[in-house]
Image 1 (cartoon, rainbow, N blue to C red):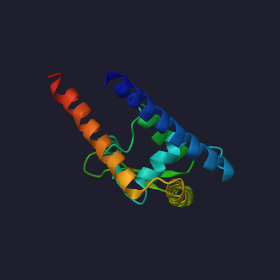
Image 2: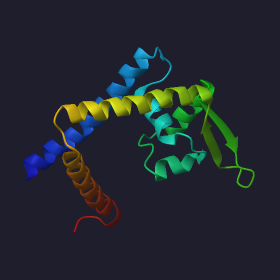
Image 3: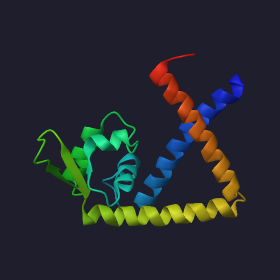
Image 4: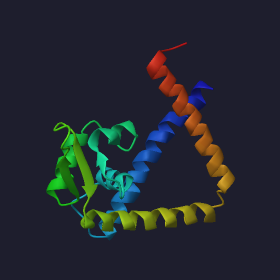
Length: 151
């Protein structure tokens, strides 16, 4: 089990990096050179929401340690609008600009294409569902470990 577990953790990391590579490749095809894969994924996760920055991390939309840097860069490049909350000046709401929405629309198309390619590769809905359920269970184990420590 230990060997399989270690292989799985490495596979999860590689899959995430590979997905960012897919996004980078699509950005290059779109001739969008000012965004990286992490930033494109962040924009995609925000979508049409008007969201507070801290909610990005709490909802699991952003996994990096430098969210402030990426938010600042995305705003400077014209992909995000920022607005301080009238009630809490420490809180900043962000919303995608039309420029960002074009990128997100293309990412949505890419997701549809990839879903079709996965199906064409013989991976069924049941396979995806089983893999997703297993990953959720592993996430729960890791979350419990973080919160409560080893049993």
